Length: 209
Image (cartoon, rainbow, N blue to C red; front, top):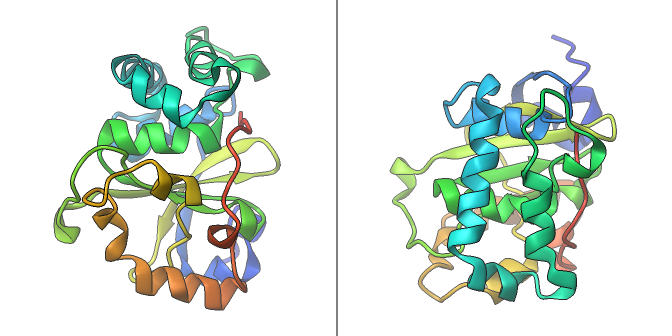
């Protein structure tokens, strides 16, 4: 069945996507997509914002090391602190920077897809030891149409986008165990997509409605 949302994502990957579920576009859609995927329900987007504020504040030393330039951890805190019904652009989700914050807060694997394969990443926790594969939570969201987030549901054994190189540089050897079970499927991603961001790293920043 034709799905216009799936058509927004890299053509070589579309067969691995089961379906996509939209969320309301009100400036909170990135947080809505996460809220829906973790079981809060999309209307509880504000709780996700509060959770991520708490995650950064509680682990401020870690995030100051991760984001050393321009007091960036505080910039993220400012971007999260908006709870009105609609959000101006400055309060949209900074998806590359917050991916690892989301993964760490909820102790899960977060795949973020983009219209170009170079913008697709897997975000893993920063602190916790790996959860057994059968017990892991794996969720996916995607940026489409330039500034909108949707929920993504993947087919079994899907190829896995790479982690940003900076993740490996900021975690312990034990925590790196999160990635071991995905290596074969990350290699498959590279074969299908023709390389990827894992070879060149990923930049922080970027925002989404």
